Length: 172
Image (tube, rainbow, N blue to C red; front, side, top):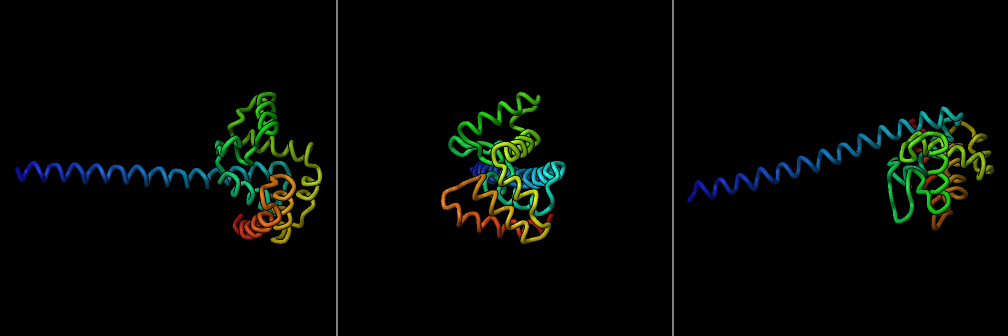
């Protein structure tokens, strides 16, 4: 009788330890994945000629929108920049046309660059001309948020993302 109770208690304890271990592994894997994705996004943006400040500005917005998860979904929004509607459809078409998987970091950053150059020329111009400094990172993030992402309370969020970009600039 006592042995059976001890055995049941041990099973419960072991089960709880296994659940905790899996939860910790999932959290750790997500953090590692986010850090890896962040580094990859930075390299891809640099390959398109953005300076460190412009990269920090874009990346502060990506952090806020998707935490660097290219498969992030929020309602009908999708991806690094939470594309929706026709912009999401155009992302998929762009990737297909260029032989890429729209779910990949490479396709999404390539499309982001394409979209900036073709549909958001004033944002692109700002990103390409910001000084390579903390203030340049702030300006890049603010313009990207205000004119490209266009969230609710965009002036407030643009300021927040600008501040995040200044911090991020120092760590890139």
